Length: 213
Length: 389
View 1 (cartoon, rainbow over the protein chains, first blue to last red):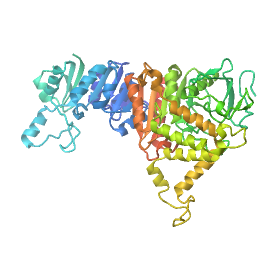
View 2 (view 1 turned 180 degrees about the vertical axis):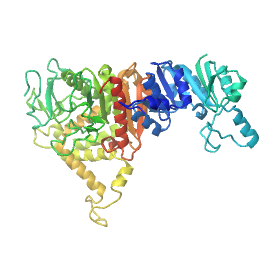
View 3 (view 1 turned 45 degrees about the vertical axis):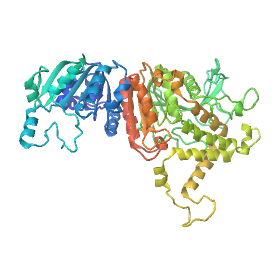
View 4 (view 1 turned 90 degrees about the horizontal axis):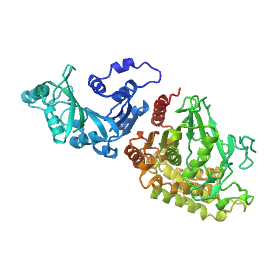
């Protein structure tokens, strides 16, 4: 993570591809809140490589401690409960990567995100991906994939959705979609139109740049 | 006494304390929350490390109720190591090779700063209860005068635990432009009813000791040592945790296998508390204990800002790192969380870490690697932003 004198280039090259795609959507020097920031890999990159004023929120205390030990501004908190404290327009961008499906109120979280941020970036594993569909069809058991690697009985993912489900929800709660990027199983990223049926079938994961509708 | 340029005043009062002493409030007296004015008044302080050329590496450490300025050198009375030697020193989180550390004895204290045991110039006698009641904000005002005197415009960090943390919160609210980072540890933005209740037990122990003499004991050549010791014993329990007491003492008996069927200090824990009480009275003034506990009781930062803590930090640029401990029941994590919620409400830059430990409130003074790693990391990150080497 961040080092005072070290060369950070190699470290940033190891940034997970989906996190790199999210980072590319963030404008340099802006004010960013990363929800569910984990060990702070994305936040660290945003702060040091893109010069953003970055903050993080993380549920696990171990994750928070690791982040703060590396000089990142992170609080222990729960996206389901703690977003209401923030004033509107507090951030230029609020990020929720690979966490939406683990929130207990995804609709409320999305609404809060576009309230406290002018923009929001959300990424999630796509339950409409053909391999997931096939797994259920052929095996008759809950799908376990690279992006969804938990068994049904120990998964934190309680609100899984497809790209189509997500787009429908955004329309319903008046959230605009500025950009949508699909990530294939091989890690290939491609922009797509939110209404695309093919994207829903062929994306293992999806990233959306959102704005208030 | 005092050099023409206002420099060190070597103390005639309180013995020959090491460290520095300065006379402040010489231009005009310091106006206190109570309306009273004091000044000129002495402040005892200690420094470690070197102030850099642009005076940007200063860290103010605020001490707790019974602490003092001797953060990292042997205590002049007890000879024990400084109270935060684990935290302050070369290569430690508050690295004296990198930062200039300042700690001053609080207003109302008894280690070189003006307090009830010092001589009232009007009467030539110790102030006793004639000393004005002070608040946390008053303590911070006095510290601000010291920082001005030292020629420091902005402190890189203000930190402290417990009552020290209250001062940190007050600093960030009263003088935000003078604080780059604030690290309040094991503290609260207001003193809880339960904590006021514990303080009252301590004060009653002192005030019902016949040797307290209505606060006039110094003039009468007495000292309410029993009362002060009991106050310390009661308070000391609140600094620990059930788990820590059990781990340290359990139900062990001293020097014997069976009960003696009497009231000597039979249990290890009793003997430990008695020891804590009896050593405390050697280094602390009973009236100071009354005044400082009262200052903590009065502390309610939101009250100054229309009842909303967030108002205290509107548009603040201060970077906060709030730290609490899982087993601290005196200043529980919920108190820290309230501070964090208020800071979130003004979108302030805040980190919040709860350290898992069974050592209770006193954890901030003890060997807690997670605390030290957090503090080091936070300061490193902040130093990068401040452009400190």
